[in-house]
Amino acid sequence: MHEDLTLALALVAALGIGAQWVAWRLHQPTIVLLLVAGLLAGPVFGWLHPSRDFGALLHPIIRLGVAVILFEGGLNLHLHELREAATGVKRLVSIGVVLSWVLGSLAAHWIGGLSWPVSLVFGAITVVTGPTVILPLLRHARLNRRPASYLKWEGIINDPLGALLAVVVFQYFISSEGQASFPAVAAGLALGLAAAAALGVGAGLLTAAALARGYIPEFLKGPVLFAAVLLIYIVANLAQAEAGLLAVTVFGVTLGNRRLASIVEIRRYKEYMTVLLVSAVFIVLTADLDPAVLARLDWRSGLLLAALVFAVRPVSVLLATWRAGMTWPERALVAWIAPRGVVAAAVAAVFAPEMAARGYPDAALLVPLVFGLILVTVLLHGLSIQRLASWLGLASTRRNGVLIVGASPWGVELARVLQDLKVPVLMVDQSWDRLKPARLSGIRVSFGELLSESAEESLELNDIGWLLAATYNDAYNALVCTRFAPELGRRRVFQLRLHGGDEDDPRGLPRTLRGEVVFDEGATYEELMRRHYQGWRFQKTRLTETYDYEAFRRDCPSDALIMLLVREGGEVAFQSSRSPLKPRAGDTVVCYLPAAERAPSRPPPSPAPLPGEPAPTASQGATARP
Image (cartoon, rainbow, N blue to C red; front, top):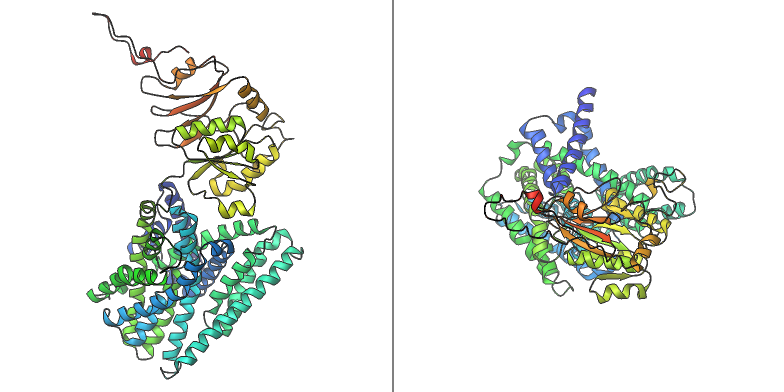
């Protein structure tokens, strides 16, 4: 038994993280790959049987995992996002919830043929659009800030609200056999909300004070918060069933907006844990799906699922967000994207047996209907969100832009070259005067401190895939690279060569505290500026089959500085000692060289052969002189 459980845990972790990596590598929605991995491991090949392998531990593990996921989601809910999209979010989590519940319940009764009690519980369950599926989709789709805020806030807040609503409706029909009055039901819901919110806010303020005053050492901050989340979840559930989900969400929101010095490290720690938990929970739920359960669905069930996806959700959102300050593209995107996930499945699995045992035989359809809705929405919305968002103009189609920190004259010239090559550029500097040449050239600029909270709130970086820290301050360059390395990737953040010389000097900044050193050994800030004032300029050269990189290097002056290349598809690659360029035909190489020694921007045409003379070879025809 223990060996089977150990093997099952290892397999869940391996499949979950493997699906995450494959999704990243293939640029596909993570949640779709997790769904496929779970179905293959469970119903198809039978490698996993979570109900058998985990036994009575299955549902407690899932519930605690969801609690941690919701806390991490709340930790990343910034109040400045709510201020920017306040009206729309408020409508979605109030009017939108009520409309979704009412319309979903009506559809379940009149289309699905369910009894009113089961229909009302089913309608409440389908309200949720949790972070277990929304957050991976947002990470994949690279939405603009506002539409991403709408979906993130709605998903994280609606998850506990929908679960609480389902609990209250369930208790109304089960505990009192449907005899309780509506005011009593409303009072129960209000009590659960108030108790959970008070516990979450109070715990958040106390924890923030303890962290700010140094009562918790650095190495214990993550573990203490993890234990606190589990404790808050259990205590809130003692007061009201499923109120713990709301309590841990409010706890995360309160803590995440207290401006703690260590909040970035805490968020990073929780993000790593959440990636593992989301992967594991979704693999377990889909692997535990019995094909015989889905076989219970008939044509009416199919019509019900179609009505929920294509009618109930769009109508609810469009009515709830009427005159809410949202644009039509934003409303259309939110109206379509509503994948259901772990919380819906867990609540249905808990309520269905009890309702069936209390005399509601059609409650046996709750689990297959909810799982059918999860499968349909995850596939439809996961595969369509990026295309729809791009078509509506709410997302970046590619992440190939370059963020240049430091508006030196040399940096502005580089930005102009990148912009000429159709590469998105954003230049950031704390001097308005230094940014003036870039603004006059039509380059997108941001004035102010890149590491400030205002920059985090205002900058749209969804099209940025590379960072070049090019200020005169080595320490600041390293700080910027360290800040953006987790978001962009360690191999995508670069800084100019250190003034101290060799980048491997043990007396200098270690690699863990800086970005990749870009260009060659002489490319310090002072040296690049000296060359700029001596008249050095950038040169763009497109490589072809007949004029390859070796021919280009032969034609370049010996002191030319090869800086980067832009692939034929728009991808950027910077030259560095640890990642030398590997150009191929179709790439455009950008080099820096004296104005008097220009390399040819394109290969000269080959002379026509004389009659009877053999045509030159490809390499001979490509030879050029500087």
